[in-house]
Image (cartoon, rainbow, N blue to C red; front, side, top):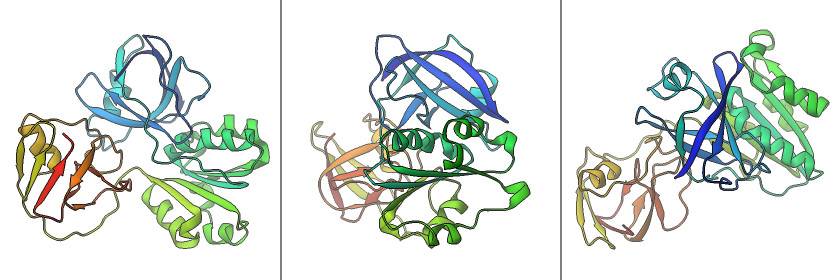
Length: 302
């Protein structure tokens, strides 16, 4: 974890705060567009936020936090209780949504999803690529960075206020998008579903706030052998691997506990995991908060 202090907390839009975190022990770890960090809050919760500042600034990170009315305690704490000067621990940046090289980009952002997409637009324009952003929000006052992005990139940015215009016609947008264009989409599930319905899968990259609703076979118990510690842990059908390891005194870092952040990544040495995450676990890895085992036994690097 990296030690930071909250330097600034400024309102950006309705129910959205900008937080600037300054490194206490010197430069912070570098990051690239699409990356996020885990922020350990003083109320013992850890939450994930996309980095939306300047990757060239090694002294500080910037994130934006929308107050969720259904908050599980994270965004509510940030908005009601967090004050400047507070020391805060943050993780090293992780990036499951990297900006890949392409001659052209179409960025689709819904609401607070703009935080992941805005640094991508800046990087794409700086690289000389053709780039366009369609930014969707329920009202103009609820769209952070809208004025800043429109001022900086002019006609490259189109804002859509759904309360006045309805949702954008992504099918028409897909029909006029050149075949050499990579499409990046971050926003609510409905926007991602609309994008997945009209853009070719090989050209579409998405990042989710919440896991997709999917059905899996009934959970079964399994055994996990921890290679480095020599421990063997039984995982019951009604508990997660993450919880079973924690109860056994082998806790892993964790954030979302929903399979979307990747903070609980675990190396699998033997056995076949059943992947239930929305990150897309690389070969030989699994996310312990939601994923389980297809084989009766797993051997993990722990």
